Length: 104
Image (cartoon, rainbow, N blue to C red; front, side, top):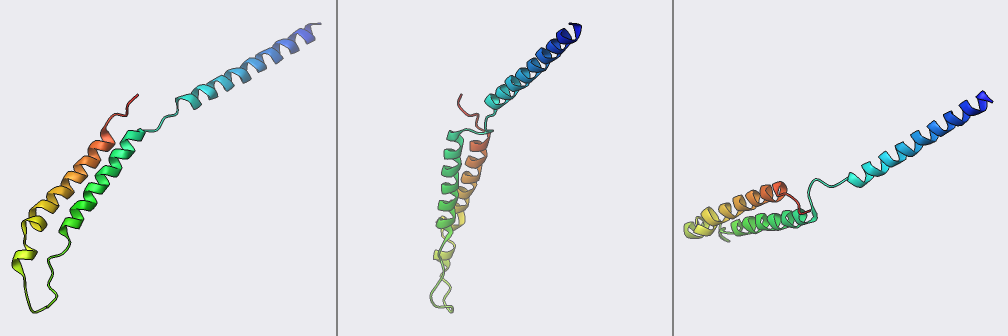
C-alpha cells in the first residue's frame, strides 16, 4: 500500500510540475512584446520619406553642355543649404521615432 501511495504522490508532483511549467510558458508567451510599437513604424516611414525628399532636393544643377559651368544653379540655396538641413532633420526624426515610447 505504501508503494501505491508513493506512486500517486510522485504522479501528482509530476503533474503539478508539468502544469506549472505550462503556466510559466503561457505567461512568457503573453509577455512577449515588440520593442517598438506600430506607431513607431509609421513614424520611421515618415522619417524615411523626409530623408528621400532631402536627397531629391539635391538632384540637378548640372549642365547639358560640359563646357558651360552654371554656378547659380549648382550652388543654389536649395542644394547647398535646404536639402542637407532636410536630410539631417529626417535623420533626427528617425532617432526620435525609434526612441519614442510606444503607447500602451
